[in-house]
Image (cartoon, rainbow, N blue to C red; front, top):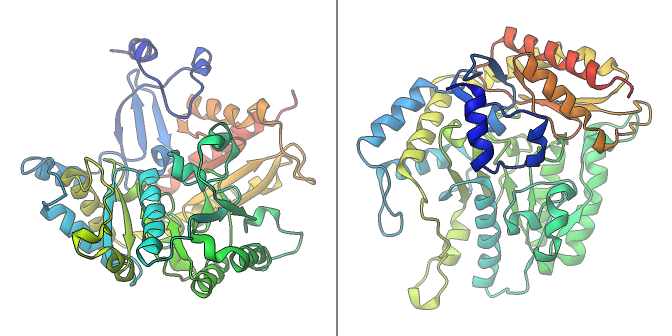
Length: 450
């Protein structure tokens, strides 16, 4: 089989995610045959450095032997069993490991298959908690402008990226969005922490006025990933935790994308440091091998549902593949890699290399910002640097960088006109330099006058 044969078959049968399929009349699909480490290889032998961890899921490289062995061992024992009324060792072990790794107030794990489902669970748990406590008036949620929490209707309701949300607005739940602490918008000379404190006034006033109707505030700690990788200072999280406590509102930390070492700590909320009432985890949880997500919460929430069956206080949400043993085995292996190696320290060293190799991007006449949190680095292309005037989105400048990358062994799928690096942690310093060179050359091409 070669690339052309598989692409032809694909275009007759597959509808791809987050894609205008008509694009593939001009933009060829890349059929991948195998992956190893940070590299993907197609059927014609072309290689691509996976700079975005295959949509942020791959932590330790494609085909990592330890995770692969764990899955194979589990496959010989049990592939799946219902988790209602039954249990199995991988689900128990994984829950114990997640409880040990996360903030102290989080003691219970509820499983699903993806990040959107995890967010839905957290939203429903929060609402249901207040209802069980006899406070049914709490029916709303608060999130940040430019936030993204998933594509299912509940998760989409608390997001704020117009591209994904606008079409479905008539179907969505009522929620409130407040101004983001996104440091890109701070005044000249203003620190990121000062700007975050200033922006928190919007959240403070919303909670002060409406807390009797608000179940929870949901945020992506430190990085609004699908919101063009915009970033903010940890002081905002600390202020938010305090305000949620004062106003009797839950805090949901959506770390589906930023958890497991992406931002320079195991979990981004630890940089507050804050302890959320609900922690949503997905993506990197299984090292990129299998779909799995988890919602962690505390004993106070669990206790609000623990009662005689006749009270109908139980949380009856379910998924067919909840706590799948194969996925749990992959997640256990992923956590073991953190336990056996000082991954966070190595990531901090690699983050320094990322910073060093992209320092000159800041001087580019069409780069409005280079921002970084740990192993996430974003480069924002603009039409006018002084005014930070964006390019017209219809020009698709970021797509030009993507095309250039594919021709030069790099997978750099952009977010609009934001080019970003979010590679697997096994990337080498030389590979990071190679990635920076390709991105620079691609940006040079994309920024040319048309």
